[in-house]
Length: 540
Image 1 (spheres, helix red, strand yellow):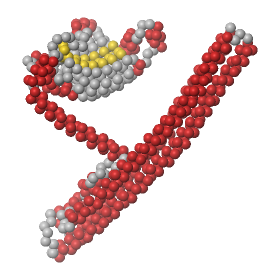
Image 2 (cartoon, one colour; image 1 turned 180 degrees about the vertical axis):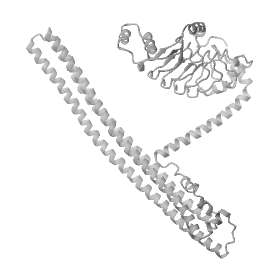
Image 3 (cartoon, one colour; image 1 turned 60 degrees about the horizontal axis):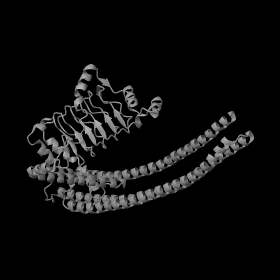
Image 4 (tube, helix red, strand yellow; image 1 turned 30 degrees about the horizontal axis):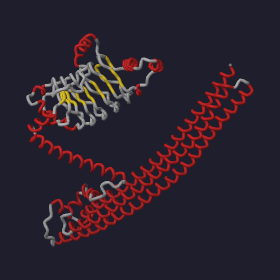
C-alpha cells in the first residue's frame, strides 16, 4: 500500500476544537432560525446573493448545507430540503441518525465526530455515494442495505470488533474506499489481508491505495473460504431473484384480476374450511368423484386465467393508444401556439421600438392602440387553439371511455359465464355426494356396510337429516367461495375502470386550467410591458 487515498482527513484534527466547543456551549436544537442562518451564510456573497438574502431562499432550492460545530443534539426539521445533495453534520452531539427521510437526493453525508451508537435511519438515501461516520461509538456495520450506490464509507475510530462485519459490505458493488482504522478489528493480525480478500473491488483502505500484490496474496490465503462464500451468495441471489420473479408475476396477474386462478387455489380454498366435506371423502367412491370434480373445476379456472391475461393485454393496448393520441394532439397544438407566439414576438420587438421612437402624440396613441389590438388578437388566437384542443381531447376521451367500459363489460360477462360453469360442477358434485351419502346411510341401517369409518364420520350417519345437513353445509361453503371470488373480481375491475376514467377527466381539467393560466400570464405580461412603456412615453 502506498499513496494516500481520496479521503482528505479534513475533520480528523477537529476533535479538539469540537470538545472545546461542546464544553462551552449547551446542546442545541435544529430549528428554522438555525437553518435560515446556515443557508444565508453559505449563500453567494455577490449581488445575487444579497438579493436572495433579502427575498429569502426556499429550503427546497438548497443543494448543500453545512451544520458542523453547532452542538446539535438531534437531527430535525430537514424535511423541506428535498433537493439537498450534500449535508455536513460533523462535530456535533448527535446520538441517533434520524430525520433524513425526505433527503432522497442526498449524495454526500458527513456525520463524523458525533455520539452515534448504531447505524439506522438511512433507508431513504438511495442515491448516497459518500458516507462518513468517523469517530462515533458504532459497534456493528448494518442497516445500509438501501445505499446501493455507496462508493465511499468512513467508519474509522469506532468500536467495531467483529471481522464478520466486513462480509456484510460485499453487497455494495460500487464500494471503492473504506476507512476502518481506529477500530478493534484494525488490530487483528489478518485485518488488511481479510478485507482485501473479501472486498476485492476495494481501491483504498484507510486512506491508502491497495496494491495488486496485496490483493493477490489475500486471494490466495482466503481462496477456499471465499469460494464457499461465493457459492452461498449465488444460492441466496438465485433464491432472491426467484422470489422477485414470483412477486412480479403475481402483480401482473393481479393487474389482470385473475391472480391464483392458474391452478387449484380456488378449489383448495373451498375445502380448507369445509370440515364436513373433508370427513365425507373417506366414503367409498367419493375420492374418485372428488378427483374428477377437481380436474374439471381447475380447467375452468385456467380458462378464466388465460382469458383474463388476454383481456388485460387488450386494455393495455387501448390505454397506450389513447395516451399516444392525447400526447400527439397536445404536442401538435403546442407547436401551433409556439408558432403564433414566435410570429407575434418578432413583430413585438419592432412595435415596442416604434413606440419608443415616436415623438408625435397622435401617432404614438395610434401605435399603442394597434399594438394593444395585436395583443388581444394573440390572446384570442391562443384561446381558440386551446378550445379546439379541449374539444378534440374531449372527443378522444369519450371514445376511450366507451371502449374501455365495453372491454370491461365483456370481460365481466364472460367471467360470470365461466363462474356459472363452476357452480354447475359444484351442483353436480353435490348431487352425486348426496346420493352416495344416502346409499351409505341405508346400508349402515341395514347392517350391510362393511367399511370401517372413523367415529367422527360415523356420527354423521345417525339419521337422514344429519347427513343431508352435513352435505348441504359443505355445498353452501363451496358456493360461497365461488360467489365471493366472482364478486371480488367484478368489484375490483369496475373500481379500476371508474378510477381510471375519473383520473383522465380530472387530468384534462387540470391541464386546461394550467394552459389557460399560462396564456393569461403571458398576455398580462405583454400588456403590462405596453402599459409601462405608454406611461413612460406620455410622461416624457
